[in-house]
Image 1 (cartoon, rainbow, N blue to C red):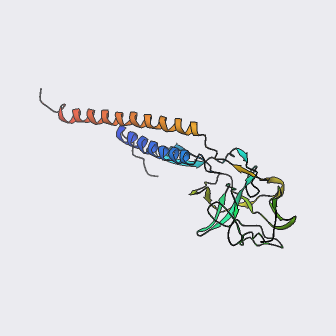
Image 2: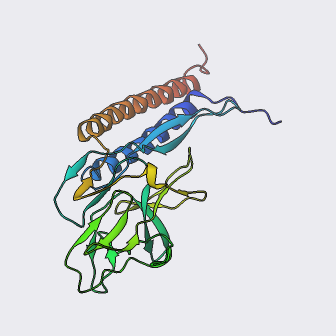
Image 3: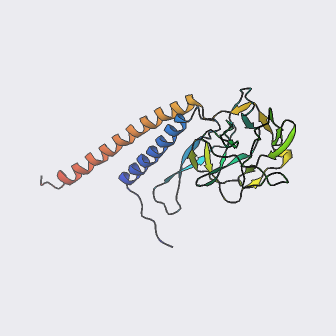
Length: 244
């Protein structure tokens, strides 16, 4: 087993600045997405290392649900409880809690950026095929378990999947997350799809702003510490060695 190098005051201060910079990035991104439907905020924290060296900055996704807001738009959906919708993107399947859906020119059910929403495998649809809305349909409804009903006839069922406990979700922009390995379907009894509603971001704008201010003040304090240490070293180098 290697022996860790004991960090100096400068090392500690530099590590603190790196941590605060990362925390500032996270806070700024959270604040920028305070109005993004289905967005999940991130939290930055410092992880202590066993070898006694300086801590490293890491992040974790806050999976708490956002507030559900009624829109009365029949193509707006929100998931009450656990689970994510699955969409097909040019870079593969992604997860999302943003349910601002619409029908594109190809009659596919798509998300806000035009990614097709995928359905479960059953007699009427395939897991890798988008949900298609027939052109003659007059009304679209969604049951609480995600069944897609066109004029009262089921034409598909939304895929709703959950991620393993402790999984780290990676934000991909526009309310999307990279789909991690090990995700599992959410059973009908554990899912509740709400039609005519949207889930807001779970980021509190006031808390995010307060956090940014706190980070900026802490950063300024650490910079002052580094200046003081540098000044003390300068004195030690230039003054203490002079003959009296």
